[in-house]
Every structure is written in structure tokens, then in C-alpha cells.
Image (cartoon, rainbow over all chains, first blue to last red):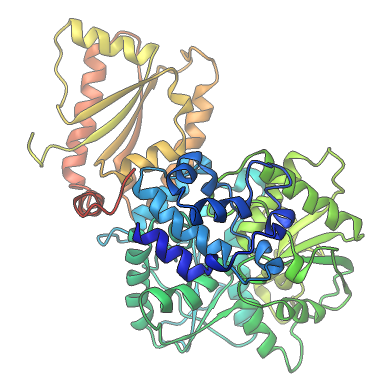
Length: 399
Length: 149
């Protein structure tokens, strides 16, 4: 099987020494000892790919990359798993899709060429955008995820609106795409390469039609996919791709637009795709440090050692995922923080879901909030009439 | 079957609505041939994913054929399907799928005529909306062997 050979070669799995440090640190192995990154590599190197595919274990991996932090041989285990999933898919193994596969269906629908989306209905008169802007804001899936996760108190569109509010405050009126597609992150990581390529090509065409030289996104998965995977699979986008935190950190050198005091203790949860995958650790913290009154504390597992939010690509949300999330919330609670800030809408959804389900299970009452929503709450009302509805010091709760 | 015949995935409740389908069968009341009826214990349990998957696979329309108002065998499906429908509508409209492609009809027990009329009405409205273009993508994927599900 050439796909398997390719996976071994590209991930450098042949360097594996079998030391098992990956397994020792794997958050899934700690809860489901049947899954071991070391044994997955061993099975494939020993030619037992069919057994591995049939065992369904490929779908247990969170692809969080924590194993790579300990690997002496620099094996890219997430890439290894991702490439093997392409092989598994060809054998009819598509993994477990949480939410009944709804989000996978949404991605597949967006891969269709004949789609005329109505995806900018959330734009209101207070948000300023410009078609010929130098900065393109890549919205991502928030207009589609928003209706799905209101029941857990997550409002991904709020983070999107707040991102644009902050950009407006900095004098940037970004362009937004009316027919943007899913970035394809989930399709790619679930082994659905065909639809990933279609989505990527649609987006490439859309992005090239703009006059933007910088693309900003508030989603680490979009960020990593656009910045690293698009050039790898389909070619150069012709724009500089930045996460919102990076963009803000470059623009906040002058007077800070954050003037509202937020008297709270915050801790930052590093999303895998932004942190370990893209080495963006300092920028979100720099931006947070500009908020007056906000005290930033670190969790024991932060930066390169950060724990995953428990699930990826909407797969395998089960007991292990919940346990990882609850442990993360407890860890955040022990720092004394009032707010757990993340820079990923999906981490926000997953952690909010867990805090809702398990709030009576020893998890300290802790507000999970997206970076952009926290920042928007700190904009002065005088300077920004857009946030006048945020009356509380923290833009907490729904709405 | 003609390609112009709208393809409809219709989730039908085992209790009231299915008794209407039974009555339609006994009474030899016809309904359009492009309708795939999927019998479920309760239409209240149809989730957003089942609706989206039907569209993804190229359905021109999706119908929820549930029991008459106040006649739910499990008492609570009306609220559940109302919130599922609201969520699904918001998602499909964002995706550019005409909201007229999704319809719920509450069917009186054993009323075959009403069931057939409801399906015919829906199919006629789908002829006005036109064929779903999503089917093309799935067909292309399958033809190229790119998708194995």
C-alpha cells in the first residue's frame, strides 16, 4: 500500500526507537490503555496495517501532538495517523463522527461547486467591512456552528463579531467572503482528502479574487490549514496568514484600545493547532497583558505542554474526551483563575460543554471565553459604540 | 425514473403518520414515486445530522411526517422536532439550500388521503424550487471512487 509507505516516510515513523514516551504522555492512553501511539507505529512497521485499521484505533488519536514533544526521533505521529486515516477510509472505515456526523455533512455540502451560500447574515450595521480591503477576515465555520452549540452556551458567532469589532477599533475594515468554504481542516484530519482538496481549491480561488495581502482568522484550525496545509497540498495563497492574536500583537504597539478595566484573573488554554503546531504561544499572552486590570496566571500544563481540549475534527467525543476536558477545567480552577481564555472557537465549545455537564462535579465555577470576546469586552464604550450591549465588565454568558 | 422527479427523503413516524400510510396503501391512494419513506419509532428523534446527510447525498427535499398535534405516542416529540427544524433551517439557509426544501407535516391518524396530498404538495413545491445541485458533487465523488462511506 503506497499510502502507508508514504505515511511512514513523511512522518519519519521508521526512526521510532520504541521507547514508549509517546504512550506515556498520551492523554488518550491514560484513559483508554488500549490505545498506544507506540504500538500503532509498531503495528504499521510490522505490516499489520489491516489489523490496525479494523481495530478502529486510528480514530482514537486526538492528533494533539503532545507525543511529539517527547519523541526523541522526531516522529510526526499526528501526520502519521492522518495519512493512515486516508488508507482506512478507503477500506470503508470512516471513524466515529460526533453529533451524528452533522458537521462532516456540512463540510461535504460546502465542497460542492454549485453552492450559493448566504453566510454573512450575521453582519450587522455596526460592523464595518470593505470589499477592497487589504486585510481579509476568514470567518470559518462559526455561522454554521452557532446554531448547533447554543445549548451548551457557546456562541461562535459572537467571537466572529467581536473579532471584527476589535479590527474596526484598530482602524481595519476587513473584507469578508460571501462564498467562503470550510477550510477543510476536519476533512483533512478525518482522512477525506478528496473533499479537503475541493474545499481548498474553492477557497484559493475566492482568496485570490480579493485585494488582500493579509488574511486574519480567529480560528487556529483555519490558521494552520491555510498557512501550512494549503501551500503543501495546492499551492501558495499569495497572502500572509495570521491568527487574530498575531495580528493584534503587531498592531497593539501604540496606544492600547483596551481601556475598560477587567478585574479578573485569567488563564490561557493553548489550542493545539495554534500552540504546538504553529509555535504561537506569546502573542495571545501579549495581547491579554494589554487589558487593564487583567491578571494572567499559567496552568501547570501550558504552552508546549498544554493539554488538548479533548476532541478534534468532531470525532470521538466520549468518556475519554469528557474526562480530559473536566481535568483541564479543574486545572484551570486550581490556578485561582475566574476566566479560562482560549483562542479557538472549538476549544471554547468543547470546554463550555464540559463545564456545563460537570459543573457540579468538583469543577470550580469558571467562565470559558474566547480571546476575541474578552478583548471586545475591554474596548472602551466611548471609543467603540459597537460593544455598548456588553454592560458587564466581562462579556459573559450568551448574547 | 426520470431525473426530473424530485427525490425526497421522508422520515415517517411509526404511529400516527405510518397508520396514514397504511391507510393510503389499503385505499390504493397514490403518492409521488420519488419519495423514500423511512419509518422511525418517532420523528422527534430525527436529528439535524439526518436532515443534513440527506441533503448532502443529493435529496431535493426532506420531509418529516409526524403525528397530529397532541397525538405524539411519546408525548414530547413536537417540541423536539420544532427545535431540530429551527436549527436545521438556519444551517441549510446559511449553506444556500432553499428552506422550502425542508418541511414538516403533521398527519392525522389513518388519513391516507391527507398524507398523499401533503407529499404531492411538497413535491410540487420542489418542482418550483428546482433540482438540488448538491447531488452532482456526490455523484462525481462516487464516480471517481473518491468517497467510500
